Length: 317
Length: 317
Ligand SMILES: NC(=O)C1=CN([C@@H]2O[C@H](COP(=O)(O)OP(=O)(O)OC[C@H]3O[C@@H](n4cnc5c(N)ncnc54)[C@H](OP(=O)(O)O)[C@@H]3O)[C@@H](O)[C@H]2O)C=CC1
Ligand SMILES: NC(=O)C1=CN([C@@H]2O[C@H](COP(=O)(O)OP(=O)(O)OC[C@H]3O[C@@H](n4cnc5c(N)ncnc54)[C@H](OP(=O)(O)O)[C@@H]3O)[C@@H](O)[C@H]2O)C=CC1
Image 1: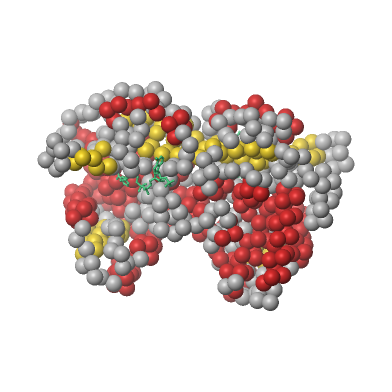
Image 2: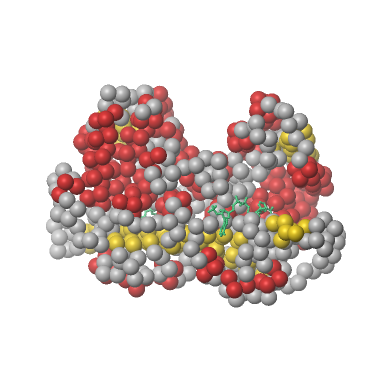
C-alpha cells in the first residue's frame, strides 16, 4: 500500500496486519472528497452533546470535532455541566432534531447518574442517530427483510443501507472488506453479544451470509468453538483471552477489545491490549487487527460516514 | 397417537417424542384457569381481522376463535371483503388500539396485494401485538439489555417478559422447557433465519444462554454444522431435509417446518411432513417433535397466552 494512504504517510503494515490506521485514513480521504462534491448542495453537520468533564469523554469529543473539521463536516458542540437536567437535554435534542443544518446528533456517553441515559438517546431522531444505537436502528438490523423479503438491501455496500448502523460493528465489516476478506459462506465466531458490539456485528456478518456462532460468558469450551471459525471477532473486554491454540490455522481475526494492562516500564504505567494475544496469534492468522490501531480508528471514520450519508439523504443527493 | 390428545387425558407419547398436542393442551388448561382467576377484574379480548376468503386463512381464524372461547377469552371478529381499502383497515386498527376491551389484535396474513401489509401490522399498538411481529417487539428481542445491562429479564419465564414474543418461536422454547431440556450452555443450531421463525428463535435461545449458530441457504456444508448441535431447530420449509447422519447422537430436535408432499395413497392426496426426516432421525435423537402435532399446536397456545398476559398488564393484575 502506498504512502498516499493517509495524510501523514504511515509506513506500510506487514502483509497479514489489517491496519485500521491506514484503512480509516483512506476512508476519511474518501469522506473529504465526498463532502467537497456535495458542498454546493449541503454541508454535513454533526451536533455533539457533552455533559460533565470526564477527561476521556472530553478527549473523544475533541477527536470527533477535529475529524469533522478535517473532512469538511460542520460540528456544533453543546457542553453542559454535570448538573444539567433531563429536561434541558431533551429540549436540546428536540431542537437539534428540527434543525436542518444538523444531520447527525451524538450524545457522548456515559451521562451522569441523575440522567436517564436511554431516554436521552432514544429521543434522537433515528434519521440523525449517527451512532446507530437508537432502538429503531438496532431493530432494523434484525427486522430488515432482506432474505426472501420484499425490500432488497445491498449489505455489500453499507453506505447504501438506508438507516444508521452502529459505528464499531460497521467498522469491523469495513476492515474485512477493505482487506479482501471474503465473508460469504464463511464460519464466523463472534465472542461477546453486547448490544453495542457483539450482537450488531453478528447480525451484519449474517446479512453478509457468513454462518455465525455467538460465544458469550456462558458458552462451554469457548476455545473449541472459536477453533471452528474462519473469521473471529473478539468483543469481550478481557485482556489477551484468545490464544494461538484457540485459532484455526489461517483464521482472520478482528480484535475489538480495548483493555488496559499494567506496564511499569512505560511512562504512563499501562498499555492497551486487545482481547486477542496478538504476539502469539499473529503467526497463525491469515490476517489480524492490532490493538491499538485496528478497530479503534474505524469507529470515528464510520461516525463521519454516517453523518455524510445522513446529510445526503436529507438533501436528496 | 390417538385422537384424545387434548384436555381429556391424552395417552402418554413415546418417551423421546415431544408432543406439542399434549403440551399445548396443558398450556391451554393453564390459560383457562388463569382466565377464571382474573375474570372478576378483566376478561381478555382478542380482535381478529380477516380479509378475503382464503380457505386456509378462514380455517386458521376459526381455530383461533374456537380456542379463545374454550379458554374464556372474548374474541371479536372483523371480516372484510378483498376490496377493503388500506384506510378502512387502518381506521379499524386505530379503533381497536383505543378499545379497552381489546387486549390483542391479530391481522390474519397474507393480506391481498393491494394492501401494504407491513403498514397495517405496524399500525397495531405494540402492547396489543399478540402475534409479536411488530418491529418494536421484534426489536426488543435484540435490544433488551439483559446481559450486563440494567434491565433484568427472566428469560426462563417467557410469560414474565414485558413485551410480546412471536408465537411460533416462543412455542419452540416452551416445548424444550416443558420436556425438561436444559438449554443453558448447549450448542444450538438453528436452520433458517427468517424474521418469523429462525431469527427470533435464535435470539431466544441466545437469551437462554445457548451458544447459537445460524444456518441458512448460503451456509457451506450445513450437515457438518448441524452435527455440532445439542439442540437443532429446523425452520426452512424443505421436506425431510435433515437426515439422521446430520445429527449428533442424542441431539434434541425441534422441527418447525410444515411441508406438503404427495401421498397418492391418502384421501387428500398429500400429507404434511417437517424439515426433518422423522422416521430416520427418531432413533438417533434424545427428543424430537413430530409433524404434525409438534410445534404447530403451540402457535395458537402462545397466541392465547400473549392475549391473557396483555390483558393482565392492561388491568394491572
Ligand atoms: N474499538 C472500539 O472502538 C470499541 C471497543 N470496545 C471494546 O470492546 C470490548 C467489548 O465491549 P462491549 O461489547 O461494550 O462489552 P460488554 O461488557 O457489554 O460485553 C462483553 C461481552 O463479552 C462476553 N464475555 C465476558 N466474559 C467472557 C468470557 N470469558 N468468554 C466469552 N465471552 C465473555 C459477555 O457475555 P455475557 O453476555 O454472557 O455477559 C458479553 O456479551 C471492550 O473491551 C471495549 O472496550 C467497545 C466499543 C468500541
Ligand atoms: N409450526 C408453525 O406454526 C409454523 C411453521 N412454519 C413453517 O416453518 C418453515 C419456515 O418458515 P419461514 O421461516 O416463514 O420460511 P422462510 O422461507 O421465510 O425462511 C426459510 C429459511 O430457510 C433458509 N433455507 C432455505 N433453504 C435452505 C437450505 N437448503 N439450507 C439451509 N437453509 C435454507 C432460508 O435461507 P436464506 O435466508 O438464505 O434464504 C431462510 O432463512 C416453513 O415450512 C413454514 O411452513 C412457519 C411458521 C409457523
